[in-house]
Structure formats: structure tokens, C-alpha cells
Amino acid sequence: MIRLSRFGRKLAPFYRVVVIDGQKKREGEPLEVLGFWNPITKEVKVKNEELKIWVGKGAQISPAVAKLLK
Image (tube, rainbow, N blue to C red; front, side, top):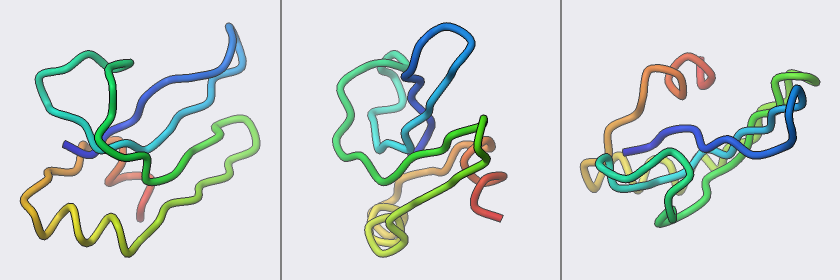
């Protein structure tokens, strides 16, 4: 599953776009970090080539990440 993992401090969230087993916790150990999203500065950076590789292997994209990628 390709989804967001929360980092940062209270009231200053920072999210990483990660590949992780769908049954693990949000802050669980990811298989790979694909990028990040900073909702405060609205900055999004994702490694598109690795994203395509993981989707080709069958990873599903979460609705939140799909919305960011548009």
C-alpha cells in the first residue's frame, strides 16, 4: 500500500509518502520512502519512477495520496 505516514510535532504535521504493508500501523516500518508532503507550505515531492515501479508490482494507492498526486 502507498500511503501517508505522519511526522513532525504537534500542530506542525509533516507527512512522508511511503510503501508499507497495508496491515501495519501508520507509523510502522515502511518498505520504501517515496517522497513527502508538507501541508503548511503545500509542498509535495514524490519519486515518480519508484511510484510507477511499486504500482506495477501491485501496490494500491490510498485515496489521500491519489488526491495529492493530481
